[in-house]
Image (spheres, rainbow, N blue to C red):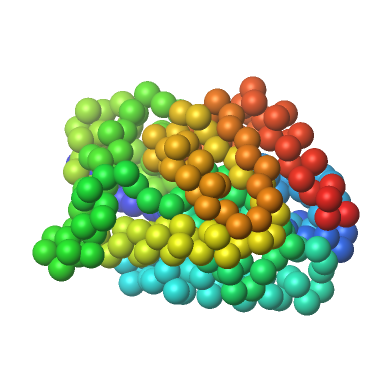
Length: 273
């Protein structure tokens, strides 16, 4: 039996604005994340005197119950509106996205170009024949058990932390709770929206000419390194690409490799200021 889902109620999951200088960055979280996921990158940029804004995409955070009704067009519109507002008062402006947020950043950049992109584990697709059949499955099977596909390892701290965002009272050492989480059903339409965002980002990559910093974890089993390298090869502008020994949640200031990330970030943003 699962405890009640009380999702993302903490203040750390809310949108944020970190005041700095005239140079600014807009941070876009991934799925099913919140601004908390990108905060370590925001802290790095703010320490370099950048103004940093983190947005909460529609249907995420405390609004997670409305997610099945949301579309990728809504997510893109939210990013685009925030970017345009930031560009009115700041320059240069960077667009920063993690995972699905990276795909959204690329889609928006094709219409409303920022001065540069910073993408961490940018999502393009999942390498599975079932993923490509998602449009068909959406009409035949309205729900899916995504946590079975992810093969959750409940011994990993990052897995436990992510689940506690949804269910802070869950006993994650209880085998029955673990199985109930694996059997949790989600509407397949949510994943179809993510699939469309990734495909659109991949298609638009050659049109993007602004410089980009792309960071990727070598142990990432969700956004696999060779898929990110394919994305880099299609990108139309200059790319600084860095792989670090990390899994999908590579934005972790406690990690041993974090000094590499900070160094790459600092070198990248210097060209704009």
